[in-house]
Each structure stands twice: as structure tokens, then as C-alpha cells.
Length: 307
View 1: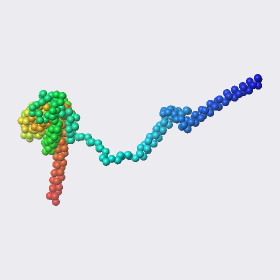
View 2: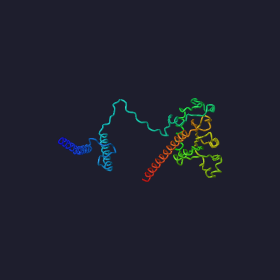
View 3: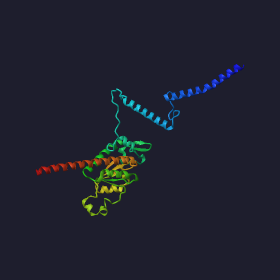
């Protein structure tokens, strides 16, 4: 009994001593596995015995390597162009104010008129129909009229004429002064019309502008002609042609060149005055180019005469 109990005690002690060895072995193998990359930690995690700063630097280098590999793969991939008879569609260029289209006029709300019960009898040729109680303006007529009017402004400025822009609403101020900047010294903008500017010019400007006739503009553009009938009468009495955005409740004959469109819409007014002012800017550029060409020819003739 004593011998058997002693042997059992020796076996138990041997097992107790052997356990730490197995634990140390397992931890060593796990550390080696982490070091070899067999079981990598997740993003932002660190290896055992690795500081936070070291883990951050290691993750940063790994991210940089991954980006380099990705860029190299992208650069090495060939561009795939499918074989087809028809070429791929090209993107449409953005429309400029010099090329107003039906879509731009429609998007600005130019076709919306007033109630059909308020439609002027003289406005009937420009009416497309009525919808939800409103008169719809025929933009198929507005577009060519706008283009012809833009050509008129271009020719007036090309002949060194003066264009006066009148818009008396609060929303007109920015757009008319922007149009004036395009026309430079060939354009003037008025946000508030003073009665008698044309019919009583001597009181406003004196006798010298009256003698030189420098007080009279060659063309006047009204953004809201129905609200400036007094100014239109002054232009008519002085034989000054006028352009105006005419709505369905207004007689289009009050101005010389009516543009049938929605007068209440600021987007429509900005589109129309932008088109007209850019056309005038083009006329000014052509006039300066022609003057430069004439000056060059005159200088060449002078050199020939000297010889």
C-alpha cells in the first residue's frame, strides 16, 4: 500500500510539473502563428506585444501597399470598347443665351400666360391654346421673334447705336445692369423711369445734349411694358423703336417689336435680356473689329503714300 501510494504521488507531481511546459509551448506557437500571418488581427488591432503606435504605422503601410497594388492593376487593365456599328452618343453642349431653344424657353415658364378671360383680342395670333384656365403662348412663334429681335439689337450696336434697357420691378435690377455691362458704353439701364426724360429733355440735360441729340437712345428694351406705358408714349413721340416682353393680357401693338412671353417670370426676363444683350455684345465686337481693320488699312495706305 505504501509503495503504491508513493508511486501514485510521484505520477501526480510529474503531471503538475509538466503542465506549465505545455502552456508555454502553446503560447509560443500562437505567437509564432501571429508573426507568420496565419491568423492576422483585424483592422485597427495590434499583435500581442505590439504598441498602439506600432500597430498604427503597420496598418498605414499596409493601406499604402494596397493602394499601390490597386493603381497598378488599374493602369495595366486594357480599355474595353464594345464593337458596334453606331458610335457612342456624345454629350450635348450646354445651351448658351445666344442660342435660345424651345426647351430653354419652356423651362423658364415663358409659355404660361394669364387667365384666358383676360386675354387681349390682339394677342390671339400668339395663343397656342388654353390649359387649366390659363392661356398658353405659342413658343413656336416666340423663338423666331426673339432671334430676329436679337439680330436687330446686334445691328443697332454694330452701327454704334445706344440701347436703353428699362426694367422697373425689384427683380429686374441685377439682370439689366448685367446686360448694361455687356454692352459697355453702348448700353444704359434704368430701374426707375422719370416722366419727361425724353419729352422734356432740356430740363433734365440742358441745351447742349439737345443740340447734339445725344439724349436720345436708338433703341429701348422694356422688360415690363404694360407697367411703363408713359415711357412708351415718350418713345413713340420721339420716334424711338421699342422692344418689349408682352404677356397675354396686353395689346402687343404697344411696342414696335413685341416678344410674346410670360412677363411675370423673372427667369423668362433674364433669358430674353441675356439673349439680347449678348447679341449686342457681338455687334460691338464686330464694330470694333471693323474699326481696327480700317485703321490698319489706313496706316498701310499712309506708308505707301510716303514711299
